[in-house]
Length: 382
Image 1 (cartoon, helix red, strand yellow):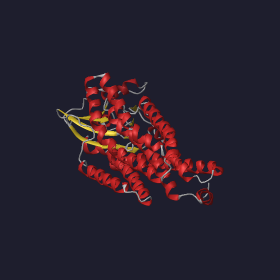
Image 2 (cartoon, helix red, strand yellow):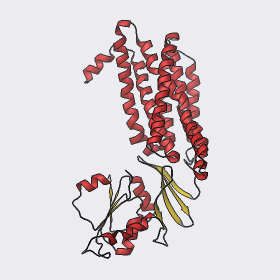
Image 3 (tube, rainbow, N blue to C red):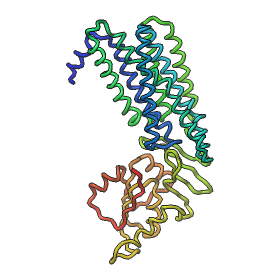
Image 4 (cartoon, rainbow, N blue to C red):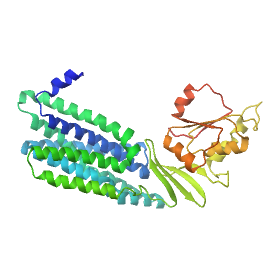
């Protein structure tokens, strides 16, 4: 649909109401995508986690559509709608703070292998989204009721409202994943969308001349203060942690135990790189990559390793070992997450001059490269 078509669709309709619908649709999907990252450090990103998250979000929206439609018929006033969106904004802003103690219980469950504690904390976190997402589900049916002046235009109004809401949802899908979470983190992503929803709600209440605007303005200031006070808060405490960060792909932790550094991702149930300045041996799966040359067919011998391709470079454990054993042979290391590469260089001594780092998907690299290697090592799960 071109610009002229969009103008014809929205002409004669309350623009601020449609803007509210757009923002609400954006916040709904942003909450869902940010919720997945909130859960990553504790429950990972498996299909089971995604299925539970998406299923419950849809269930909350379903309840919101039913209840919101009835409420709109009973109280068809703008100040009621903006009171609902303002309340949703406050609850969205509180999610990352209220979730923290529940998620700490989850980490204890992992430490003690307590299935009950893990399941309970997982359900508890998902229930945190019940009220704000349900309230966001009120918005579309409420907006249709407020915008409708004539039953003969019901289809047109409903189509525009759901179209605008979906446009907002598209932006809410990409903005947190590609821009906000990698740059400001999950906590401030929640606060950003909560603040935007509160600003829209305050504006709507002021247009309706409702004193509730001042109440939500106060909540907005309180959330801003809470965000400023939590700037240095740790996302997921861990013994010996010396670094943590969020990237577009992972939640990243580095812990140091008795002089050895370990790279952990997401829920932390697997170690992705190991570094000890005084030892090459990791006593883990990385050591097996050194055995790979023994499986090359004749006429190659195990000592004839002149090149290595490492798919899933992480923080460079295997290239470090290969350089020490076989000398400064050319090594191509492929890693999709640039933040992990930076961590490897700063905290895992991944500075070998013979290592060429390629920040891209390993499948794409293998499809386009013309190079041939004596050893190709794969340590990637996607």
